[in-house]
Length: 410
Image 1 (tube, one colour):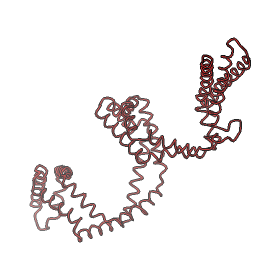
Image 2 (cartoon, rainbow, N blue to C red):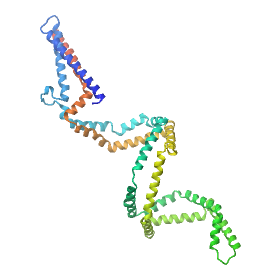
Image 3 (tube, rainbow, N blue to C red):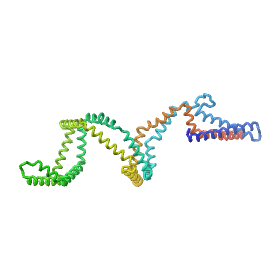
Image 4 (spheres, rainbow, N blue to C red):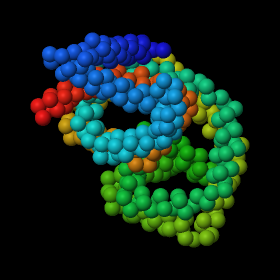
């Protein structure tokens, strides 16, 4: 039994003793004032009514938890006999009145979860603790992943699944969305920038390749001049493509990509060629081996970074948590968005799983023995119920006195 239960048990025992003491006091007063004149009949009537009230309320309170005096009187020991119905009613009450969307949203809005979380995160020891605990958990989880398990997933689940799926329509649709949003422009710009930079810094490589392809009978000085000219033209052409968003080469590339995205979705021949290419690629043993090797390298790198207490990854994580905490405290709009998101998540949970969560109550109560259920409930509410007995004694005595007084006056 916990310390809290022991304190409740002592409080219940004290209140029971007080209620019984009042009953005994009323009985003693009643016995001492019987058949006495001189106003003692008023005291006697009050004591008699107090005993009736005390006994009636003792019966009512006791009948909730057990049979009074062990007698199997109907409609007594209500909680042990109806614990299943009690658990179901309590479950329904909690689900309808506590696990409801309106209550959850109001509570999150008034609690200011984001601002409190931000204030907690800005403390150095808190953010550091979050990073330390999270790093340890993530590192342990990554270390527990076996290479054989990853290989089994890649070779037995991922690759066969990819082979079965017709990916060309999906790829074509994805390409169409990228082209419609002009999202590929940045990639093309990057490629042109890098290609131009490479050509500028690798003149000898380009001229050497051209010289190797030249006929044997041409003079060397002629090959060199041709190579330099070709290199200059290539540099200028790539620069034009880089600097002109409406360049013909860009438009040609866009037309080709647009046609390819359409063919991947609707042209059977293109779709078949794409699927055959996919099959050939996925059938290569190097695909699985490379995937596993990449995963293993990434896993080992992450574990090493996570285990470095003063490493860059942990320091950046702490800094980001600090920044997040400051933003949640200072940016009211951001804090409101966070609270709204939390409220949406909580509302989704209670709307879809509230009753399932509340079944914990009925399931727990159903596992209890009837006597154990009564004892648990009495331990938590029994002390307050003893006030019913005390009030019954006092109110009964006052009522009896009033009735006797009215009878005497009449």
